Length: 484
Ligand code: FAD
Image 1 (cartoon, helix red, strand yellow):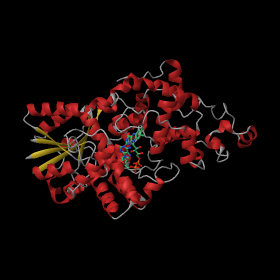
Image 2 (tube, helix red, strand yellow; image 1 turned 30 degrees about the horizontal axis):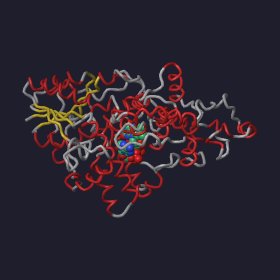
Image 3 (tube, helix red, strand yellow; image 1 turned 120 degrees about the horizontal axis):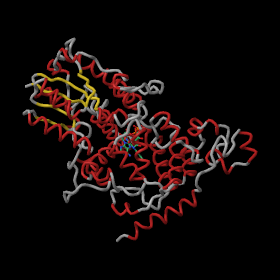
Image 4 (cartoon, protein in one colour; image 1 turned 180 degrees about the vertical axis):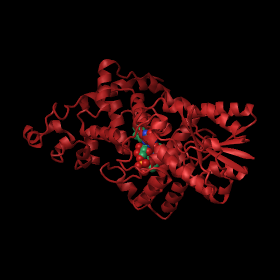
């Protein structure tokens, strides 16, 4: 048989469950990646993620070529509507099956269903494989056979189910000679950004490493720090987390390899590894929530939270713009927004802080923030992003109770005590003392003057007062209690 491997969010040749399946089942396997015009059309012309993918594809192409042992081996890359192009290509290459890593996002499922249907008319099968999570769909259920809506028992069950088979490697090397040479009409190499209508971003200036090589490099680096993850992960000025999010998103690292390492280390007594493993379990948890409750992509997981009346109108729009642009007057919030705007990354603690600020200080619909993150995060993932936003809005599974409202100043004092992170992103505040940097409006005029800070000039006056906003939020959320 001949097969077609359709790469999507699994841009790697190491431990790729889908590629492994394809190579085992077919005598000959072609490989393709489609720059889907439907997805690309919605993006700005400069997008770090598109560049990340492009760079990663160059490496993937080369790795496939080497594995095939043929000069003409490698990846076919097209710029087209995937739901049309895959069936067309499958017919042209005369394959019997198309293989793809499973993706349970609603839009991906709809696309795959359409592709499967088209293929079927040509007697070709679409075979999807689990690759980007450890457990999916309905694999982890309560004793009553229902899907978990709370994390802790889910995690307990997840950990007790975890067995070496779940983490087994899917080697490709021995099967590499089954990778087909590219037919003559597909000789062109990976297109440039310009070929697909995009411009270069600041990805390389930021030194965000791409591809399998970049993923391994970050993981090796994090491996040295993993044991202290539990104590460092909450401080945005410290190099605590792994920065692997974007690699997990595009599958340039294998989740099984990460979990296997963290698991072994946890068993050896590492508290840092245990906490990091827990974060990887959160990832599976939110993927399964989205798969089982696809309505969360539009509405609150707890439906009663959809009764909340968010601020609307011009004033709300202006508050939102100030939030997006990092002009709220709360330094930690503004520094965090500068981080996402300049780099596409935001530290997890800060995602919670700015999220809470948007919803509970500005009174804005969490979906506005969700959309902004979706547009700007390099590691944007519908399930984790939606889960994170519903967590801060208190409307999600296992979410922050609605009456727990982060105070942006005390969060700042606690997690950036010397204002190191703030100083990095808001240089105009760099000369303020460790005390005043968290709330410049409380500083003495003399200190502000000496530090070169003009409130309402080079740094904004707070756009809301936290205490007032807090009271308003409690009133706004009261509607949740009233519904029986
Ligand atoms: P590390 O701390 O090194 O964690 C390792 C990996 O574990 C992450 O890369 C991620 O895959 C997973 N992970 C960690 N925390 C979570 C979590 N709470 N939920 C699900 N997975 C997690 N994560 C995304 O991957 N994409 C998103 O779009 C996203 N949006 C978020 C929005 C909000 C409002 C919040 C509060 C959190 C969001 N997160 C999201 C979760 C988390 O903030 C990021 O995964 C993490 O900051 C990425 O950095 P890292 O790779 O250095 O993480």
